[in-house]
Length: 463
Image 1 (cartoon, helix red, strand yellow):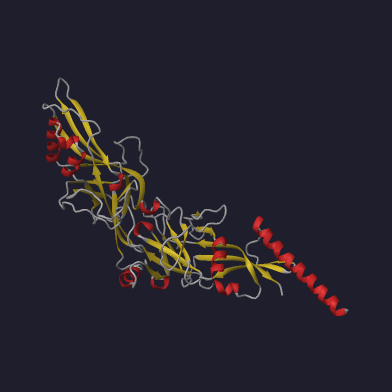
Image 2 (cartoon, rainbow, N blue to C red; image 1 turned 60 degrees about the vertical axis):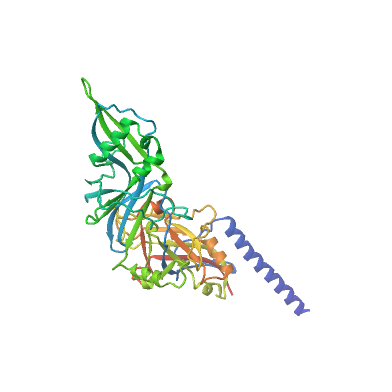
């Protein structure tokens, strides 16, 4: 009889315990738990909520071989030396087309000048006080896609005449007014008078070279622009809607000054060639890994221990950061572990690695990845974007951080058990990924200041 009573009580106690655990999970699913940060244990009858903020994560840097840079709406021009990322340069390729209507230019008209005009889009990276010399060169062939290629990439190029058509020394003011083409945000490069006089003859005769786009492009195939490599220090972004402006005047009692615009042509055929020399930087190890990788279909990867105990992000040069959680099984094997309640990933960039002129990406996206290092679906939690939130502390640098809720992702990772295969990739989201040079640097646990923290809240069963 006593034995039966003990069994009955044991069943009742088990039922109450099970009901308590289920109630906690239900509460966590529909309400934000009232958690005091810094508190290690929160008692709740037979369970605790345990907070861990020393959980180790694994960092590495991934190098993407090539990525599309066409049709972004931005021309990036410049060259700068970055102590972490190396010598970065970008040159755009662009076409202009025929005037929208066939103009009439009399044979008495006089040619004045021919200008290539481009306007800043206000994006920049580096020291804007440095004067830049921009060169413009004529292409040797028409910009056209190679067979079986769907876009132009960061490593694409078009042959061009090495002798520049012209150049211009400029200092761009990023905050200048955009109200007119005569503003400080505009760069005009004078093109040779010989080219202008040839175009004038075509305009006067109404040549089919002026009226047929195909014939015009076979004559004037396009342009590429670059910054003098000796003036390193800044990269500027320009709108792709460039113009070649033909200036002339008609004679009379008072000269009538006119111009004809040859507008930007074919957005898909405007692209940026981006190059990076990593010599002497922590990322040299990543370049070596790329050269020696056994499988060319898998993007090269270098653990943070090979890159100065740091990991890097700069999507515009193909640099991505990979985060893995190989020790997650240590959590699930704890005898008191019941389940994750919340998981927050806090990423603090290395203090001093960013400034107002070398800014952090305003957003960084978390995407799922695996051993191939390809991007998968976004790491999302209900009502939380995968780009996280950024607070910048330019004064002290200690409080600057990106914050992400990765609760849903870690729960799915625990179910799969693929801790050494699956991870998350940190990238700059489009369109900024290929139109800005913004980058971020993070320390791993071997540095004195550890800048990536995984804060876990899990439900613990009191024994």
